[in-house]
Image 1 (cartoon, rainbow, N blue to C red):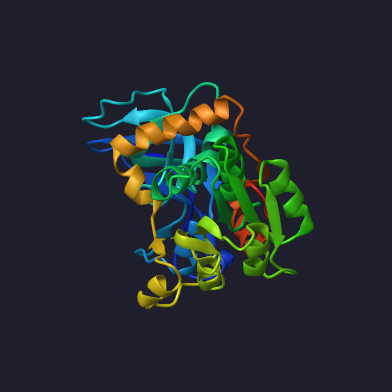
Image 2 (image 1 turned 45 degrees about the vertical axis):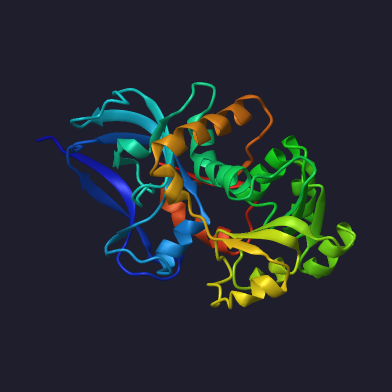
Length: 328
């Protein structure tokens, strides 16, 4: 049985960015329903920080990374959707994308169109599919809606800015610096709120003439959850899909009634990518938005695989905008 030796990031304990180490890892043959991918680019996302720091648990030694793009080098038994040489991309599945090569279950992969580069594929899958389920499924944004989106200059936020504008809706986005505000506005975010200088609840009410927003999309968590709720119109939807500031405290559900019959949802990308009936049309929609030019991907930070720790330091320090990728 042939084996493949590759370089991959591993952690032997949870903690700060420097717990990530570049190691040689031996890969066996792909098993039933699996393929071996030679990766050309790897996505960096805040969920990777959760696994590295121990917020999300995994056995040790642990692997990091949820997103990548590359070419299939080997296929295992019972793989019918893909063949050797296919260009593929993915988001979700088992952790471990911070690797030059890896074995993956074929069921979570999608074919990467020739019009989209490996770097674009690695930068868009998790963030783009996240935007898709947020604005097309969890709360389907309608023409004329006004919604609030936190971290509007991040990878998810910048894709959302463009997609929401394309839907004919209005986006209010929170950002940390004037530079980030300028970037978000250049890609379709109608109003930006500098949360370091303004109270975003007060500003949202001003911008909506007191009506509030139809939905608030919140990846920040602890610091913004209750205030995001205060931005909603009656019967509005609060969608929490991350916790970069820390876990949300338990919620007394009666609050939803007193604040206007509100709704709260906590979706996750895993629910969608594990179901091919959902994954394939979502990926198709995303690819078409990029190919058509309606969404322009902002790959603003590139690192070598060995510099994964610096990528995390920059991400956690809020020094990044758009998407960050690793190059094996």
